[in-house]
Image (cartoon, rainbow, N blue to C red; front, side, top):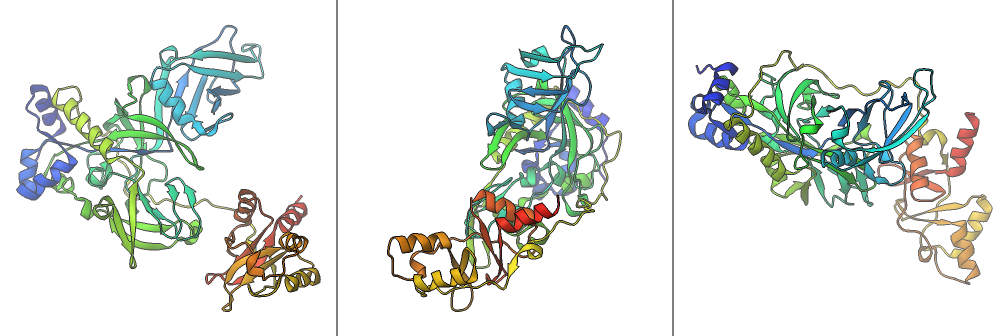
Amino acid sequence: MVEKTVQEINQKIRDGSVHVVTAEEMTEIVETLGPKGAAKEVDVVTTGTFGAMCSSGAILNFGHADPPIKMQKVWLNDVEAYAGLAAVDAYIGATQLSESRGMEYGGGHVIEDLVAGKSVELRAIAYGTDCYPRRNIETSLTLSDVNQAVMINPRNAYQRYNVATNSSDRILHTYMGPLLPNLGNAIYSGSGALSPLFNDPTYATIGIGTRIFLCGAHGYIIGEGTQHDPTHNLGTLMVQGNLKEMSTDFVRGASLYKYGTTLYVGLSIPIPILNENIAKRTGIKDADISTNVLDYSVPRRSRPTLARVTYEELKSGGIVIGKKEIRTSSLSSLHKAREVAETLRERIKKGEFYLSEPVGKISTKTVFKPMRQTGGLPLVKDVMTDGIGTIKPDVSIEEAAKRIIKGGFNHLPVVSDDGRLVGIVTAWDISKAVAMKKRGKVEQIMTRKVIVVSPSDPIDIAARKLEQYNISALPVVDAKRKVIGIITSEDLSKLLAGGT
């Protein structure tokens, strides 16, 4: 049995005899030499990941102004930071949006700008006190002007991501990027065999106090991350590092179209090879790591798993669901993850980075729970109008006009012979057709791309769709796309009026 200590490995770092490899290289070594041989040969394995880590941010201390101010609200480049910490401390989160530029710029970009040495505009307001009389301030500053700048990320190094795809007939804009209609693409994230937590899934060497590489700086693990769910291979870590020591090579602000901003974080955890069991685990291959493909067009609580695939399949550029081949793309960067792992390896070999033993354990039994909701949210089926009339596409425009007048409604779903929704026609469509003296069939004037909702959807989803697409009604359809009702902006207005 091979046995080493962290102290022994650190001594090898000092005398220059340490053998360090990346996690991808370790896979080949374990295959060739076996776990025992690999444990004898290798001292440290460096991991790496570089991806969008939304739950990231930084605490900044600006120093006291003269006269002093106790900041009630503070903005950096028009991005609000949380000021409820102390007089001149603030936490800027990666996903907070600019109040002037919206989704194009946010907290992640402010952090990158600071690391890049750029000047940032600070604006703050306060209510004023005897000891902090100032009520507002505007100034510019750089990272060198602040006293402390500490990156503190509540959730990083996500062990495994689900793969996102979309079976609906419209594009979806998500935190995984744009999902094309009709299973047009599948997006994944994570570096697979390079992933830190897949190289030590039992947290034998990873714990509170473990020294890590964070965005070019030497940082530390300070606890389990939020949403830590190791029982389902969904572990996360809470980490911190000195923003002033970081590099824009490994930290970048980003904006996901129609979703918002985030921060790309480069993170590496060194795994000391203390015995052959640890060596065996660091020999993991992409083919050993599997994850679920989920349909993001379905509400989260009932989102189906379409397939289970490996990172080897994902990295190949395509997966198969049923008989359909779907091209894959990664939200994270494997190229940069490799650079992160290689950079840490070189620092260890040069004696610039030493390993640390954890001072506390990371839980292996935590389970992530959904939010407890004490107030029930009304569903579409509770508000919709059911028993509505429908019409076939080959019915005349004149007949459709008569039905709308007789029924006293403004929307008429158009269905096929088997009852499936194929379009919708409105009172406005009819009026326009009559004014233009059209004498054809409903199919000539109907809207074919119909936005719909499910009866089990919460009403806020319906409200968002009405606003997003600037429409006044949504047909309610079942799993077979058969019309069972309709919900209108008027229905929602009545509901809100009744609750006030």
